[in-house]
Length: 338
Image (cartoon, rainbow, N blue to C red; front, side, top):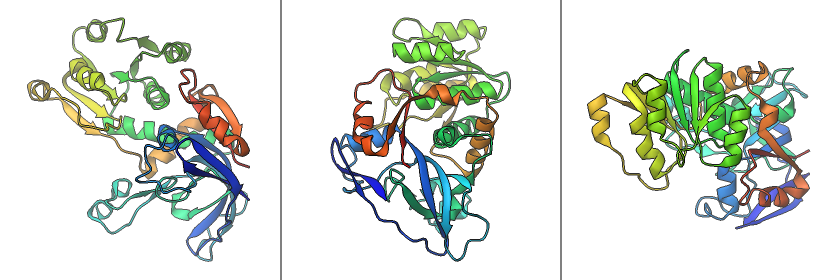
């Protein structure tokens, strides 16, 4: 079998990997596709070497088929089409015991803290597996992990039909949040500065505004009769995004922070007091978010095919990653692993 190893900043090496036989509670998956996410790019650029120890197989946005199982597994069979929720939780910490294993205090993220899916065969715990509906292709199923992120964000926001929401940032996750919000019946505005993403979002049927060219606050107030947005999703992880989110939300509205800030931003806490704004963090996903992601993807409510803007073979993973450097037109790139 072949596997792609992250060797050092800017370099992958594709070579023979190790087919690891499953333990009692594990399964071997033949990986079909694995998407490149923002975290993978950070690893590729050498920004996570303190956490990721080369040579390491990374990747976690995947789909595949069931190959074999350990002795303790009876509810899966060869050929089953699956996706993996790439979280390895301890089950013993206070967060896990409270039912929040996705924010386990000892959480290990598969594909970062342990071997990932940029390989032909991947051995994982069966508790991480979800069956792919028959009408969903494995190519599209490789997007379920980021779709589940969006589903979790929408659920954290308690978004309801008819509410007005603003998504700050029109990258892959921002677009998926907008799509899941729209499927839930919300009215959606996307704020984005990249010309290609603006056009992509418009062609997908969204109202889009460029904050460098227009007054987003005035636009939202006009659209809501002066009330403000019911929900704001902050996906940019930028100082301007942190500042803008408090300007847009209505009294007793909700803000969901999705972007991962590398350093604490300056935040207008007075507005939280004055308007009784609710602030939610949204990290990763829970089991029900994966189930919802599979359901909504199989329903056809999200144009998954349009989101895939590039596909590379595993042998060409280096070119796949390099194609994303300074690329303003890519949305989601997949690696075909087998």
